[in-house]
Length: 429
Image (cartoon, rainbow, N blue to C red; front, side, top):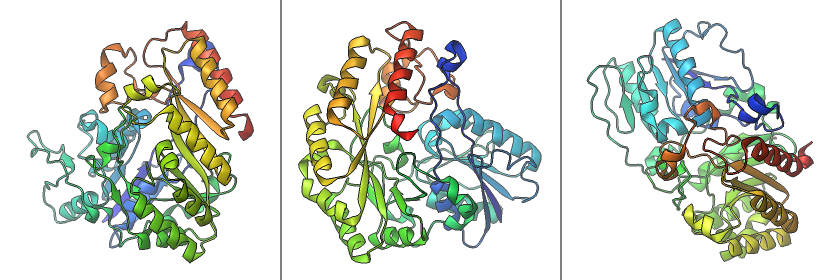
């Protein structure tokens, strides 16, 4: 089969820009579509093309007719969901082939994509289930696969959740990095310098923060990839100097993380590494991060989220402000740079903004990134806050818009947030 995989363009709307002319609040994602590269890697006996509309926004001007696919697959996060639907409808009408949608939003809120121009919805980690779907369609059968929601008939088979195991990681197959090699110079990480390549070493998360969509991707399980597969993928990136481990938590299994670090050291890969970590993991096991520093860990991304223990508890974060402070001390002593993610609640008043800025200044976090609290459909936080949400247009779910009423006057809230964001991100410019 000929299979066309589509990464949607950068999209989303901005309330501060539309209503108040504040155009400084924009987040542009420029990472490679690793999920699509991984799907393609598990289809070695098919002809696959990846169209990355984040890099080439006009790449589908011919509606995919030049490639003449037999099947189309599209991925997307929540703020891209409406755009994904529009692309799906356009390609369905132009090509009249099966259209499959997967990715984070499909995994959290699959019913959103139950439209006449969408044939199948892949829920959760889809490397193996997508391959099984392709195999079934190639044989001309209506397929019923765990983890795949069928939308082909008026009375489709009942959806069966997938029970994820190590088999779903398909470690024996490598991502098709070659399919986007022409864009490699465009894949960069702001503030880190140079080209960046993506590698996965684990899927899922060991925790259950109420705002997070990650657990839904693996049915709540935490799965680590084989060390051989991770080393292989890093080596496949060739001369790319910076490798971003895209796991939600690279250190969810500390024993496995230590073993991976030792293998990276032994392999002498010569890469600078970026990884996501919880503050309490750093505070609890500083020796692990000394080991990872020797493996090349140069930057960590930490979801500090809040500087209030009460608010952390409300998010079911299962960490503390004290752990955040200890983690910063450990990482600074090791010379590892810190990208710190924070959540700005629409309930913030002047004193909350001031406390956050004071903490960031005092902590010398290298790149603080404050995002506005955005309950993602399908998460526990969404169910909790649904009665307060007054903006249900997913185009605004970019983490830079308040989709609930703000405590401060709205214009004032966005003005303070924009000034803080500009100051925090000044090193990038």
